[in-house]
Image (cartoon, rainbow, N blue to C red; front, side, top):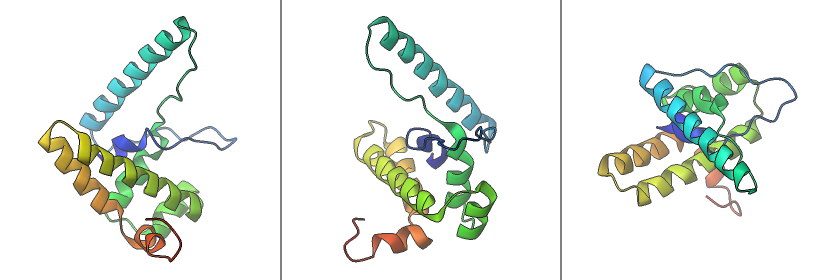
Length: 138
């Protein structure tokens, strides 16, 4: 769940093209394709209604979120993805916030449970340490 939720918080900003998305399973790939399809439909509706267009979801962070939730080390995740430590922590905290909101609001008990478990898996190491620094919001 962490990987799929990451598509709503991460935005690839490098001048280099993003790497090809990596999916931990066929099920995650299928769910990503559904999210992508809904996003395209929404963009078309926004255009036809002359509304501001939303930022499309970005699958670039799926592999990073999955690796961190699976227990991969900070150095390995950051080095493998050429990501700054600050960007990693900031994005993880945004992802944890989104997962906690899903855990609170999702109509399905299974979705709530999965979101809560994913948030707990992500809140470790440097991410957790950054939340315990005085003057920094958790």
